[in-house]
Length: 329
Image (cartoon, rainbow, N blue to C red; front, side, top):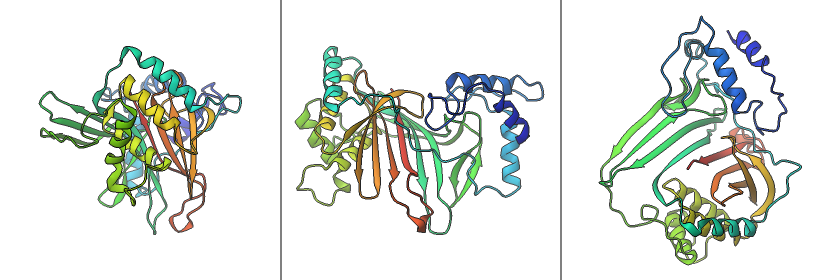
């Protein structure tokens, strides 16, 4: 079955060095063509559409999952760990100041508005001293209700490889599940906390800076100093994991990021959801942070952290992706 799938994928005309994806050979159209090719084979039964990405899980996937499970190969990743995003060599970097100005101009009409809740696709590396590191991809949607209760749905999926099985954590050991498998679905009672990041973020630079500092305060070693660039990026992630920013909030955040020391423009990238963005890099001891922002309105699209030096005791090599988050609006 694996050989047959390889032949089908090889029939796709998209070159492996195509410019659309920095870490994979197929663009969205190619993925759809391949998915249709797989589904239209008469020997494969159709199944219902998946909740979040709208792609079906096929009999091929079920067979592969069963093979992995029954042969005891559940500790091997079902998919390759993502490679670091690659900056287009022919692209022109855009300064954060310029992007912040665009965001400010875009925010004049106040649309879109701030929305409580988030929709994020993430890849996170799990490490231990006695096992190879594994990358766990998942999609999370948090929606708030009028009574201040909220629902969180977490799904195992990797949009780079639709329909393929996904590696997840399970009772201390990794296991393989179908693409689109619901890992958790929880509804939480009303919460009226007015502390960041639960309270609405302000759209004033001074107030938002104080808000972000309070949101990340529990992780800070020194509360007397302003946020460092890495702490600001951590606070940005916390903010976007709770809120879908409106135009005004995005503009103020872009202004704060433009003032951050050491965050330099490097050019254009294509993120893991296929979106074009401007990339900004900050390097610190042992890690590189890449911030991806929408070139049109200055909204934050993603944040990638990679290792810049090896950690042999954990099986980590320089260049491995530590974590990646892609926020959707």
